[in-house]
Length: 190
Image 1 (cartoon, rainbow, N blue to C red):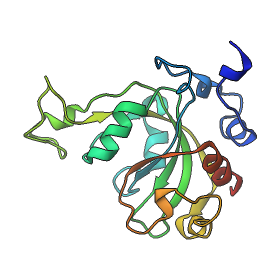
Image 2 (image 1 turned 90 degrees about the vertical axis):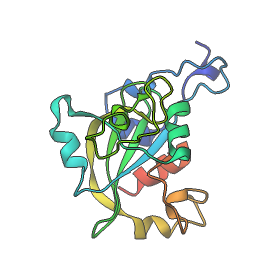
Image 3 (image 1 turned 135 degrees about the horizontal axis):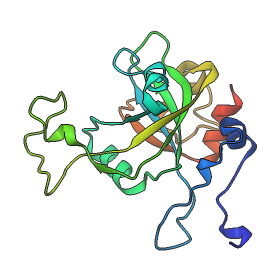
Image 4 (image 1 turned 135 degrees about the vertical axis):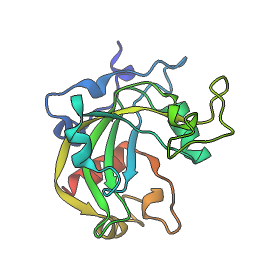
């Protein structure tokens, strides 16, 4: 593969994953222009499902179900790929912030909880033949050395984290893409 076609790497990404090079899995798009991995931030309430829960799962892997926002659904369905790294963020808690690193390990697929009347995230309008909601499997990589609090991240809203929905007022997205620069900067705060 020509060097110009290789996925971008950074010292922060290398440090985040150590010798684990699964993040180099290339995406299978029809053009080389959109061939780089996407970095993500996934939010979860630690009382419902936190980084410790993910680390304790068999194979440290869990389906990320329950997405019920169309904008987030579209990003997940259209852009998430196996090998994409993500920052695990605890929300709606005493100190919200980035607490760990995980990675996407499956392609997007229909979320079966949408079809299950007994499930918390059941959607009676969702149809298995024409699914509305999608999920991916995520695998634990590691805890951060410290929680990077939202209050600290907001200090950089007009600088390195400009444009990141997380640090803007009114942000309600549970999943959001990060640029390589945002990823590197946040991990540099660790």
